[in-house]
Figure 1: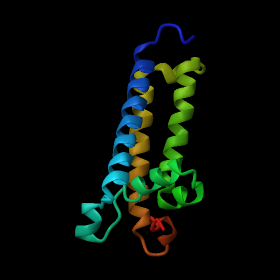
Figure 2: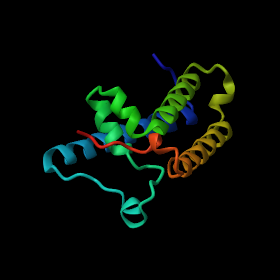
Figure 3: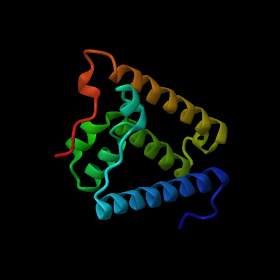
Figure 4: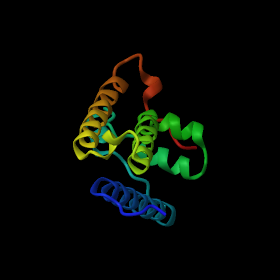
Length: 136
């Protein structure tokens, strides 16, 4: 079906499997223990970090509540869609640049930089609409 996987494809599969398993484990923990995660950075400083709202966004996504998922962490959707597209290109092999580790690493650094920029912007007055919302 997929044939022989190269190093980039193997890394992509391992990353997705690890993310999905971790996410399901966290979701099971939250569901069974009724303990909610909190952000120590927000608790200490009152500022939203790049990951604030990410857990709530993922929980809402699991429940197919796309609007609230997006509202809790818009950056998650942008990053997820970007990486899904890159992953698809890495597996179909066109364009071939996405099967190059240096290219994918560069895109990863750009994505991380955008997450940090997103974190800064969401803390500026006037950009409250980028802040996470409470899950009702």
